[in-house]
Length: 424
Image (cartoon, rainbow, N blue to C red; front, side):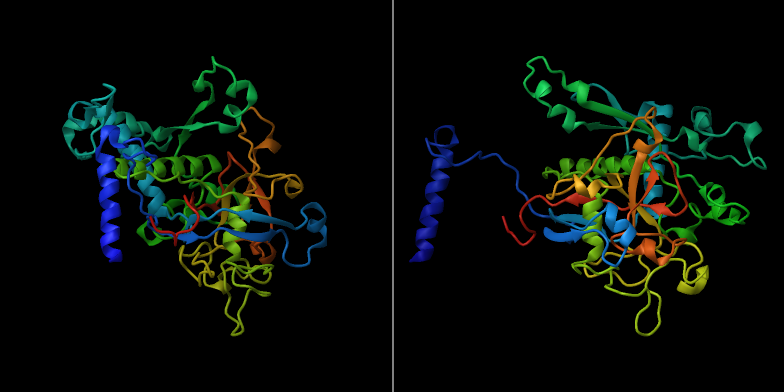
């Protein structure tokens, strides 16, 4: 009998929706909404909303005076289970290279957008880089002959520039703009031009009197390092990668008629620490602690053991992005291997004035700003750092326009909804 009643109710709703205007005077909500099913992006893990105390988890008297522990709440999100690898970042570099090449060749390699009339890249046509008929058009991408090494034809990485746009919501939310009927929204749409090629020379310029040229020559391009974390990427380049990744996935979802997700982005400092702890409140390391070794004496992360016995942990420099055991959230190398960019601006006493709900201190520094305004928080410690830098509560920074051989990144996406366990 209950089943018959269910069918009757469904039949009534269907009848109402089919009547005049689709509503028949009833409050049914908009009827043309797309369907929505939670899709966990490839290579990411879900981290539910939660509560934690950010700050030093071990005795650190000096830093405790500047960054006192603070209770905060963080909204759920997806996070890359590993740092972005060389091969993943290479997909970005090659996409930029190919899009520029398509534009230079023109004709069949471009297609007109039916809606706007503008030309866009025709990705259905592949480029034969050895085709002699294309060499004149592609010559602009290569180093000139007098700059080639042993006559080898190579792409000039200075030509690999990517343009992306972002909206300054904080500026748009100001009363002077919200209540201005003549407000021009283009004033809050920002354009960024970023060279995407990683600084492979960081292996050399980060150290004095140290032979690291083999890493410069091989780390980004040799297949043996494909699954190692990308390094030599500035904060600005990491931001550009995240925007491109969003565009790549949104274009795919749109073609299939699916609703898009929120954008890929760098984690805030609070999100990073919450994820690194893996649900272990007050623990100094992602695996708990209090030491960098387990009870068998095995080292649990890639860092600088002892007084500089770098290979003692199994890696001389970086190691594979999924090396060692993950934390309880399934995240690898949240301590050691490479330090990771966050979206947050660095202030020594930032915990004192940030909000306790999704705290995020952001300052969009421009080229002409003082260097101290370009500081961005990095977390996790790296292969060259001592154990203290690998603690989940330890803060550090680098400048947003610099690239280091010990700094990489991973992305997050804000989860849209209360919990992944909810069903449509």
